[in-house]
Amino acid sequence: MTEPRGTDPTTFRDPIPAHRTSPEDRGGSSDHFAAPLGSLKNGRLRFTSGAHRIVIRADLHLRGLYRARFGDRMPIVGVRRGIVTIRYPRFPAGDWLNNRSERLAEVELNASIPWDVEVRGGTSRLLADLRGLRLGSLSVDGGASGLEVALPAPSGTVLVVIVGGASNVAIRRPTGIAARLRVDSGATHLEFDDRHIGAAGGELDLQSRDYDATSDRYDIAVTGGANNLSVDDQPEVRGRGLGASM
Image (cartoon, rainbow, N blue to C red):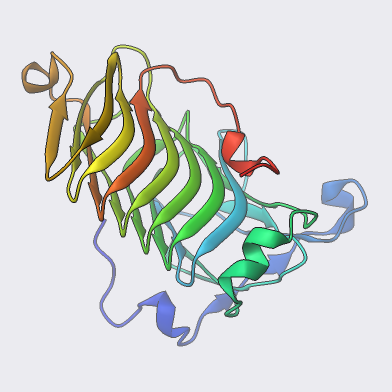
């Protein structure tokens, strides 16, 4: 998706602020945020300062562009031309990891349009159930820990990129969908479909058998090394990355 020049939402220049939905729309609750879909043909969800303890889902029946409910830490949210930008105030990393009683934030995306999902600043305890979504790309910059992703059926080659290392990460795709996994800086406890690697240094490049013969596939790249990383075609969501033991 091409973004209009001069409208980078990370600058929050002339943003359209998120607004709360009315209590009657949410059964008496007024802590939800939303934006209209209008004539938008695609969307982008962008976290600019990390994404922690968050569930992202796709909803084909959602009437608006998105709907969100946040936990005890309230971010700044801006919406501009289909780009939903979420920016949390800076907190010490230990605060996110140790506060296990905090409510999870939830973000629902309208599955009637294609989306790109981008996280800058790293992620921990994030569940992205993107089944049913038309996904253009998924990127995490700043490392990922306790991340679980359930991918939809792809259209063309869809990139999934994690920059800064991956620890306790599970990436699941629909059965029969081809995938390639590239990891630099070594890996420990890696699973790719039926292949198990206890430890390997340097670069790894693994492919499912039908990767070169199909056009609808996933290209997954991890930089900065990986520990306890699994990529498989078992699309069920387990939510282990959100558990208290992580």
